[in-house]
Image 1 (cartoon, rainbow, N blue to C red):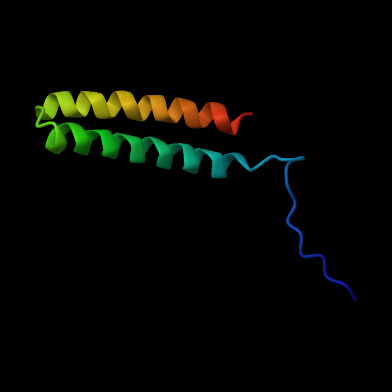
Image 2: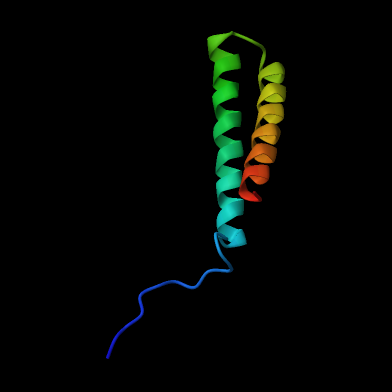
Length: 71
C-alpha cells in the first residue's frame, strides 16, 4: 500500500489565506519596529514623531506585502 505524502493546495502556486495574513502582519511589525528604533534612538527624534513614522512605514510595508502575496 502506498501513502501519498503531498499536501493539498488551493490551486497552482496558491498559499492558504491564513498563512499570507501572518506574513503580511510580520512584515508590517518588523518594518514598524525597525523605523521606530532608528528614529527614536538613532536619530534622537521625539516619541510622537517616532510612533508616527513607525505607523506610516508599517502600513506601507503591509500594503507592499499584500500586493506581493496576490501576484
